[in-house]
Structures are given as C-alpha cells and as structure tokens.
Amino acid sequence: MDILPHDLQAYLDDHCDPEPEALQKLNRETHLKVLRPHMLSGHYQGRLLSFLSKMIQPKLILEVGTFTGYSAICLAEGLAEGGILHSIEVNREMEEIIISHFKSTNVENKIKLHFGQAEDIIADLEEDNFDLVFIDADKKNNYTYFQLAFNKVRSGGLIIIDNVLWKGKVYGTEKDTDTENIRKLNDQIAVDSRVEKLILPVRDGLLVIRKK
Image 1 (cartoon, rainbow, N blue to C red):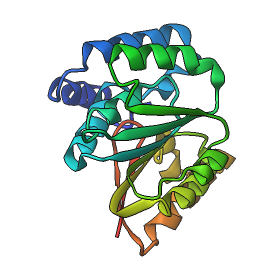
Image 2: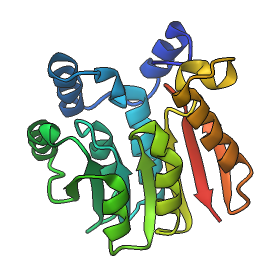
Image 3: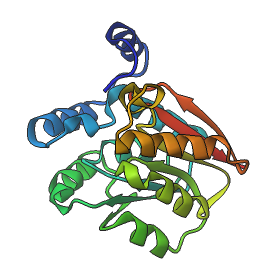
C-alpha cells in the first residue's frame, strides 16, 4: 500500500530513474503468480534501496525476507567489488522464482540465499561487520531481528525496516496486534541512543537507522 496520494506517488515514480526491464518482468511475474504481490518493494522503493546501497557501497548486506527477490536485486546493485548479500526467506516455495530472476539479473554469484527461520540463520552467520541490513519479514518479530542484526552491523552501518507506517494504522486508533507490535518497534527505536533514526513516508514506511 502507498501512504502517499496516488497522483503524488505517480509524479515521484515519473521523476526517479526508470524501473530496469528485468525488474519490470519480476514485478509482473510476482503479480501474476504469487499470493500477496503487494509485499514486493516495487519501482520507487526499489530505486531508493538501490540508491542507498550505491551510496555506501557495502561489502556485506543482510536481508531478512527475500519474497520473490526484487529488493535483493536492488540492494545488490550497490555492492562493492566482491561483496556478498545474505538473504533469508522462510518460504521454500519461492526458490524457483527467486533463483530464475537472480540469474536473469546476473546477481546469482553475489547473493547467498538461505531458507529457514531468520532468528536461527542470523544467529549462525559468522559475519559480524554488515554494512547494510534490510528487514522486511514477519512484523511481530521485527524488533527481534533488529536486535540480532544490530550486533552484526559495523559502526556507521544502516538498518532499514519496512512497513513501519502499516497502512497509516500506527498513527491512528487501531489496536490490533500487528499495529501494536509495529508501534512498539517504532517507539523502542525512537528512544534508542545507540542509533540515529528517521522514518521515510515511502510506500508503507521505511525506518532508516544508522548505528553510531
């Protein structure tokens, strides 16, 4: 869901870099074949992820929640020479579409794909100097993923968390479990003195965090 008015979002889309053709194909295939295709990062958010990645030229990226691979491909665009992106997906049924599009965008050798429970996989990763982390998985565990990733991110590294505006519910009166969990996440990070942080009203809200 887009938080911004449709006409404003359309204007923003028209005035950023175009969506690469290979990602257009992945976007279409996701909407044709996969349940809940709105979970895809999409054109504008994808270009932002690519932009941020290119700015810091990470050697190591961690992604929690691969889905069909769109955001991983965007993040991989900014990897430094020889850099690696570790991407974690719980749903093994996504493997075929993910692998096919990693190959079509020539990033299959830059991305190490993990299937399983993110908490276990993050804990088992030997790397402890990630430059960039993108969290876009089950919302109830976002703060757990943040805490696990925090200890593996270098000083000055970025952690980006998706869906933190939750269709506008977090600043409304809704009291459902998912909304309350995301409010708690936002509130906890807002007072965390170990990081600098801001929420960008991009798509469903991106919380951008810089570790001090």
